[in-house]
Length: 305
Image 1 (tube, rainbow, N blue to C red):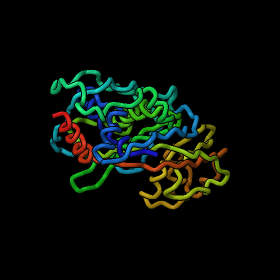
Image 2: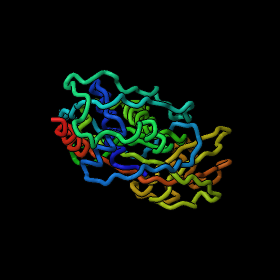
Image 3: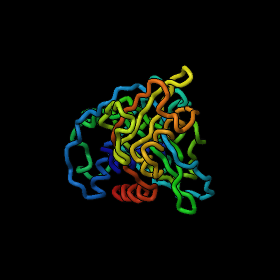
Image 4: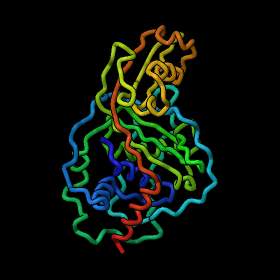
């Protein structure tokens, strides 16, 4: 299951890329997030999520973001404890969802800090990052960036994920940047937009083919469909929260999803497409705002003063 620490790490990666510095690692963020929230230490999950499609896709059905002319507050820039994890990408891309390539986290060191470690021994990892990474398992995942406008509305700013199970370190690192910079529906996220962002992380589980395209529940299941239309194969997906957020019925969701894939037929004829295949899956999106991340990041800075 996704956590707010995963969202905080995505903010860390994006902020570091925009500010040309190295980010804290996922394991450092996880440890510090637990200490900040006084959470007890527990073992990491070892379940490997099912899902084996080597595919990178975009997902959304909300309005385009509005450009807000707001000056960003500077994000905290801190000492680094370890090199950033390397990024990975899927080896193939679905039709209609072709990012321009993964943006790499900058390896430039922070100009505002020469610190290299935290003073507290309690923050040192008990095990190597490689061992911890193996314990985190592999997950299909989606990263969503929303932007909050002056009126308080939240609009989509980027959403890309993969159905291929990823090592969590690599998946979060890669897709936090891909969703921010390479969603073909939007311009790349800029530094001045950072204070208005919200990050959502969804780890996908329980993939189940269904014979009846209406055999799924709103708010519980995401959908992945494929079908043949005019001798071409089409496909698209909606995450579990989309239908509920949009207030759609199951049939409205299916029609919208098929239109997203590229189908242009009559709404009443959606069942008549050829070879319609529907896979339902689950995954709870966890969100974190920039303000929440910045407050935590400020606390991290204070630990080394």
